[in-house]
Image (tube, one colour):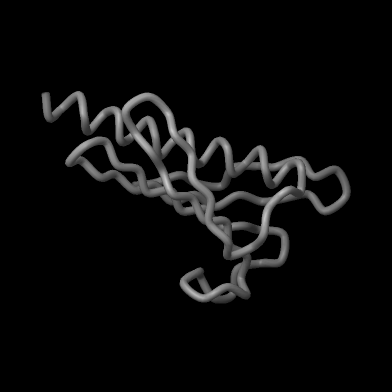
Amino acid sequence: FGIRLSGDALAGARTGIDDAIMRIVRNNYIPGGTFAVDIGSASAIVMICDGANPGCALGLPAAQRQIFATSTALTKVRTLGAIVEVDPITHTVKTIEIKE
């Protein structure tokens, strides 16, 4: 049962990352602000940062954004971090890395 919950929490965090990427593409987010995503039995808190926000990597290039998603499924908690690069003209987003 614990393995399933851990998988659900990981899926919730991944969904949070995907939702954040969509918000970046649509330019519909507040840097440093958080939002919640619910999926199945998991819920995630997601934050999108640029280099100017507390708690984010210092020296992040202007075109890059850092995403943190922490998801909970009952007693299991999983966190993913991602760095994406945004083209300033087309708003296309290229994923640099996603890691736990």
